[in-house]
Amino acid sequence: MKNISKLLAFGFMGLALASCDDSYDDWSQPQQNPQEEIITLPNFTATVAQPIDFDQVTSDSVTVFTLNDATLPEGVTLEKGRLEMTAQNAAKTTVNVSGNGRACTAELLDAVVAAYGKRPVERTMSAEVLLNAMKDGQAALIKAGTIELKLTPKASEYTPIYYLVGALQGWKPEVKTCMFYPQSQTVQTYTTQWTGDGNLKIWDENNFGDWNNCIGAATDGDKAASGKLVTSNAGAIVCPEPGTFYTLKVDFETMSYTWTKLENQTPKEFEKIGLIGDFNEWGGDENMTATAPHNWTAEVDFAADTKVKFRANGAWDDNWGAGVNIAEKYYGTGTNGGDNINVPAGKYNVFFNDITGEFVFAAR
Figure (cartoon, rainbow, N blue to C red):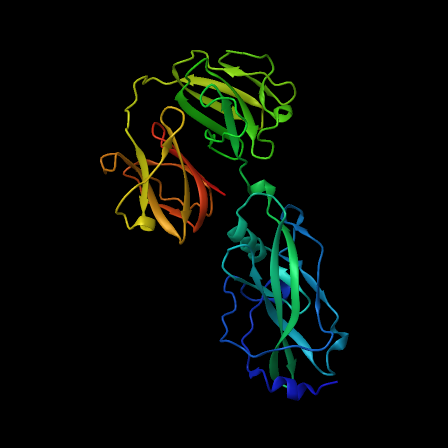
């Protein structure tokens, strides 16, 4: 067995350590260390814990790995360390861990949400395990291998995505041009002039294109001002006055819908709507495509975090902002002349309504 003193010669003195829960001090400040010399020990590896569903975690910290620490040299103790986590094209994230393989729940959740968003789907993140070995006041940074973490964000904090399909854009199941605008986790709306025969059905993001799992009215062709939604043998919901401007409000908790006629039946028309912001140096517009009347969409790819606004006809006479952070909530309602919208780097399907100012940045 190698002498720990020889191993520690590759390490450094006086390592600064962070903490969380009963064995930590401040998880809001991740470790910031200079580049260390990393050593390995024969047969000393971390084994990944069970997949983590954050809706099932009730403690401040959670076990992410176990160690076969019987291979440690005599007199050596493990102190806090960190996970260097990576996923898809996201930047590396540092998450602190205790010597017994526990990580702060909030910090681990933040890492997966930053990489993938809040959608409650199991995600895989690769994590290099680095731990601090201590003996006689000396410290060495030891690599305990790389693990593949399985992490599922909280469903209770996610607002599902819903699309409508019907007379507005045709009944082809591959066309995702009309996304509902969330008002909360359970209530969503869509405002437009309901052209054609004014009928529609609804799909959630997980069942899009599956007619056996669409959402609609109990009676096909129902023109009632309000009604109940069903998910079995769903019929078409129909605007009470096809060709008229209405808001369709849907409550997915109570499975009900309501139609509200707009007082203004001649809203201002715009030739084009575009996105402008840091990503194009506020010098031009990323033009959006008209879908349903007064509704627009675009696919955008932001290479870096950016501030954006919507504006009409390439001018500032009509512009919309909201002063929200898309990292915290992927939807909002802009006002004319409102503050910039903060959007993290990434690829998005963007939707905007120029009557209501509602918008969605759905991660792709």
